[in-house]
Length: 101
Image (cartoon, rainbow, N blue to C red; front, side, top):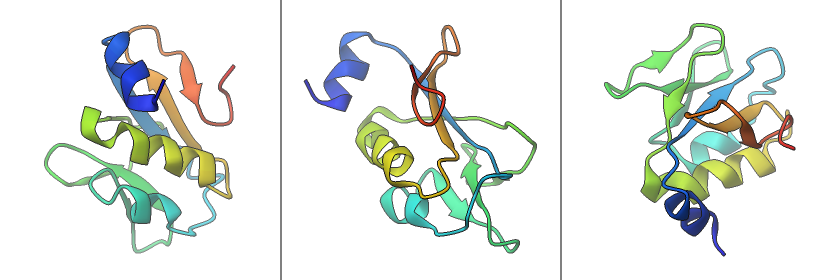
C-alpha cells in the first residue's frame, strides 16, 4: 500500500511541522515539496500556511494536502537533520519522522 493509499484509507488528515533546532538547512524538504516547505533568510526550513506565508512560531503546523503526502513523507525520510514530523491531526500521533512509532 502506498503512502497516499494509507492516508486515504484512514481518511486521516495529516499535518507537518519542523523542529528548527535540528534543521541543518539542506533544503531537501523544499526540493521535494516546495508547496509545503521553504527555507527562510536564516537558512532554516519552515512549513508554509495556506497563504504561502512561512509559519515561524515554534511547533507551527501546516496541513499536508493529499496530493503531496508522498512528497512530504519522502522529505521526512530523507531529511539529514531528522527534524520533519508528520502526524495525524485527529490524535497528534506522529506517523513519519524521528518520533514515529
